[in-house]
Length: 125
Image 1 (spheres, one colour):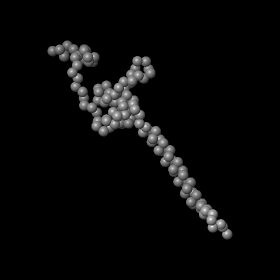
Image 2 (cartoon, rainbow, N blue to C red):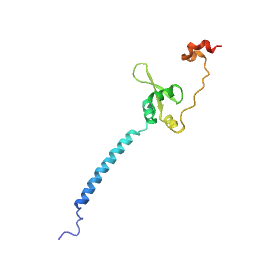
Image 3 (tube, helix red, strand yellow):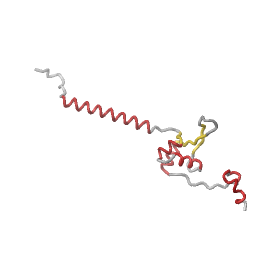
Image 4 (cartoon, rainbow, N blue to C red):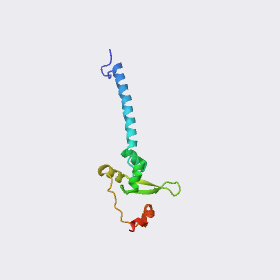
């Protein structure tokens, strides 16, 4: 006769079920690690990262920066004098929630806009 104070022994079916649950729990934990690593909040994002997050092309995000449609800064890249645009986390959230900034209206002289230098004679009429 078995000892009435000993714990009951699990059946094979219960052991199999527990093994399956442990395997599934391991997969869930691994998936959560991946999700957390993807959603790590950074202070600054590159234009490539912003493009990926927003589902846009990197060129589009660079153009937004160049045209002041987003508040972005330039930082050194370590490749000579080249600078790259970076966008803060707060600005990324603002873009997500409110969209792009309005198209700015410039009130500059033609000399301050290098791409208009060839057209100065047309602007002075």
